[in-house]
Length: 133
Image 1 (cartoon, helix red, strand yellow):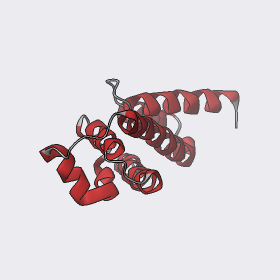
Image 2 (image 1 turned 60 degrees about the vertical axis):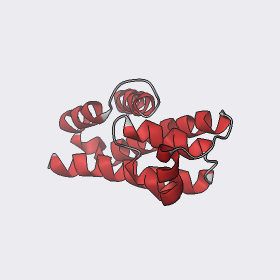
Image 3 (image 1 turned 90 degrees about the vertical axis):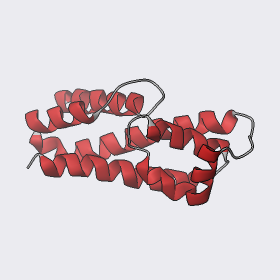
């Protein structure tokens, strides 16, 4: 890989990570822009965006985990009912951050949360890549 490729993927990773935290922003435009300019980086971009966005989501899970455990409010009860599978929707703007934090507050299994979060986020990026073809 060329230095330009690593720089482009690094920018995508930073964008994807930050977009999955409680900070505002989205990585979809960065991902789509990279695919438009450098379609040969498609597989690497898909993996990079998925891993970085999942890492950002897990950082929000960890922040929730560090909060004191609370009684299940109606919103927490919804996540508790569905468990870590609810994190398939962790890519949805605003809602996704709340789901990740709620999973941490509820002390849901980190490995299961990581798995479902990665699947949901990866499918979202794959759908964007597919739509661009």
